[in-house]
Image 1 (cartoon, rainbow, N blue to C red):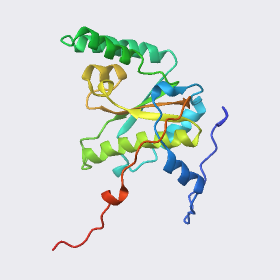
Image 2: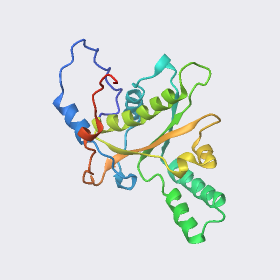
Image 3: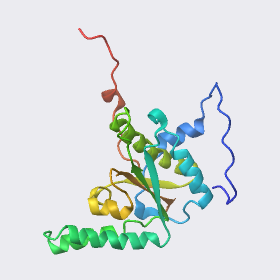
Length: 213
């Protein structure tokens, strides 16, 4: 992991790129780690700044920057969790009490990792760029955060769920009118790496285009 000093400037782009076995292996083996298994240390302020700079290097049609970040760390994690738990109880009055308390408890413990980055999708609807393209760009930001975290020696997970979709929860997270939560990316040091899960059969998913009859 890097020190507290300013991150080094990125290397100048090269017209000729060569395969990087280390990078390829990282991409081929990356997997999500549940937030409950993400402990300290988390990214330092300098590392977080570097991660966010990596995150925004995504396709962005017309350079609209249709996303922004909300960082949750320190005491804010428990404070926000308590508010989300309260909102869950209020928003689900007809749910069976035991079930409601179970899920409210999950909301109260939503931020166990040292740091979480909420990626907010904020598409510009006054341009000709389709909203779906802008929302996909926000999704790419979430994935770039995970790749950047792995490159720095951390692990993470990208989640959504009730806290990212319920209007009151979204407001508590800090999103405004016209904004949506693309993802909550939890980051930290893995206390345990789970085994890999089955991956799709690429041969069954990929086809080559041929002219229609």
